[in-house]
Image (cartoon, rainbow, N blue to C red; front, side):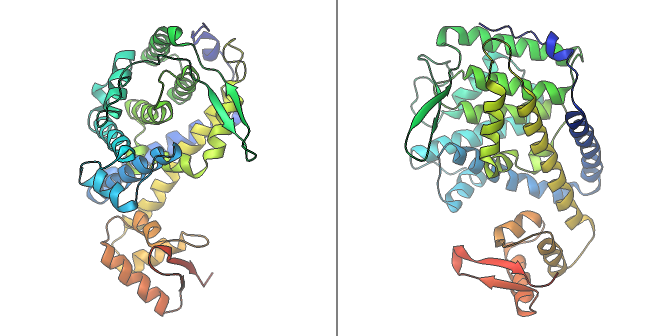
Length: 349
């Protein structure tokens, strides 16, 4: 089994692109703290939107889907799931809520990772919930012509429990002793976790939940207000490409974690930038019309009512609909389609 000692990583020289991403994230995190002190109640509305988006996006990456209405009912109203997909979605919702409410009371250890995995499957009968894999798993790619190819073979089942222990121990050591920058240690932990692929099912979703947990524990709370999972889902190919580029030579300890570190830091920074944009919309007291007008000016190309709702969490749905209607009537916006297919775009520069 490969050595999970972080000594080599600790002494590695990081390129200016990674260092500038880290500096930019710290700058944005400092601004976020300031914003939260200024308008805590308005920003609290972003939390519910982010929870819905995170639950929907992380499951959708794995092909687990339901309707928009049901996602909201499952996440916001905690209604009972009706089928297998909804059972998996409800489990994700439960783990995400626990992380939101108790991240500081969840140590990074194999036992806690297994417990979170068990909760992920708590709405269905999965005998392997909360247990490491019983059979060898493979990471495969399916091409447009239908050809499927194994692109990475994770650790064998018998190696997995010890490997999980090791990555948790090493992570806790370098973070506890302040030996490694957390924004380097977090992507490396997640990358190792995905290469171990400890479960027969749920590895991708667990990796995204653990990303949120590790970020919160290190003081980076952007995922509470802006969905990191939605950002990953939007550029799913980049996520898989970065992971594949970093996996080469992993078993021998010759892997290069830089592509995955860059990808994850870029995603975190993009989320912080989104948070800043959303704060700008609630910073000054404006009418619903002016708030929606400003939100539409942040959009390029076609957008939906839901896109505007996310940018204007302090406004009711009816206020947003009324404002969009007025902007269409005044000629500032053009409307296309009907019902769920309704799209808007700006007509003025």
